[in-house]
Length: 87
Image (tube, rainbow, N blue to C red):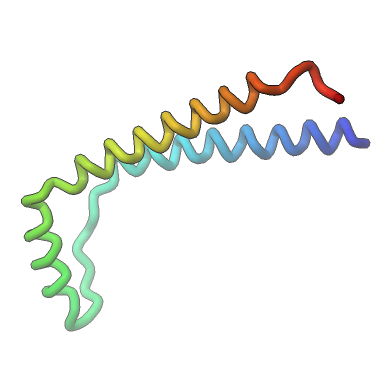
């Protein structure tokens, strides 16, 4: 029974990892659409146009890469620190 729970937990972890990778890749191709949410829409659009000068989207891509790289490195360190199972 414990082995089944362990395999189920590993399966959930793997599923979450693959889902996260695909959602991150889908985020790279996201194109925002104009919405009309009332009186704040024009103000938000002006702010968004002003922030394009700073190219924050490039910074976001770099930060996402750093987060994924760090998470992968941490996962490898955790897996490599496990010594043959048990005390």
